[in-house]
Image (cartoon, rainbow, N blue to C red):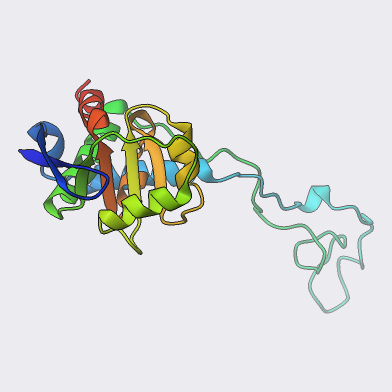
Length: 209
């Protein structure tokens, strides 16, 4: 299984990279993908929500009327959840939504997404490039040369590159990450995935550990 390496003009360089079938050629496991995406989204939640319960409301504790003889329902104090301004029953409390998944399952999820993306012809390999200074216009030219105009794209680098990152930062449909920062959510969210030539080997090795 091979992919042609493209240059920044979208033309073939004549070089090819070999894809590992245990990473890019498996039968996708949808449940593994679901669990990792769920974990990613759960970790984004702040969990700072809070509602006051009856014991936390500042108000009188006087019983509103006598227990019997009124002909209507019994009432306690004004902090009762049945009154406006009273406490909330089983209201939300601050909590941490994060949960753990084992590494093998997370690797399986990434392999599943990549295998499906390859079947959809949504993965490309690009030769290494760099900018002397951050240039958004130059990054847009690369995007357009690859046919990504109007599409969501994810560029995966073999190492952090500040100028490349800053050049892409103002593009709402483009994201740049290094190979060890990728989650299944990032892979799914991207319509097109671009591996830099040096990143794909490192990424495959990461998933085979």
